[in-house]
Amino acid sequence: MSFNSNDHSEGKVAKTIEKQTAKIPSDVFLWAALGSMAVSAGLKIAGQKTTALFVGQWAAPFLLLGIYNKIVKLEGSDAEDKHPISQYDNPDDDQIFG
Image (cartoon, rainbow, N blue to C red; front, side, top):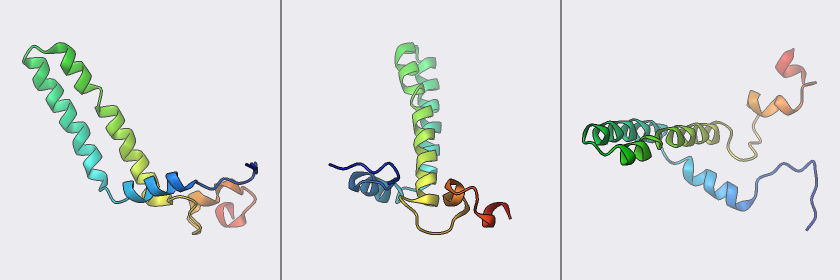
């Protein structure tokens, strides 16, 4: 297997995951985070402190997945378009700083 240090392309698995996650609306992750906080609060009130802590810790991963989902939708894997974020690897490009 050869490795090219200048090759930053995604593999087949990453591309497949990105295609599937891009289909999920971003709101799903926000509502999942809010839902986990609400369930956690309910469990805390019900006296199940350990379970409440466990469920409450789901909010951060849901929000991170939402950020990942948004990035995939904006950039995709190996986006060939001329989106400004895609051009940051070439700081000499006059289109960005011109």
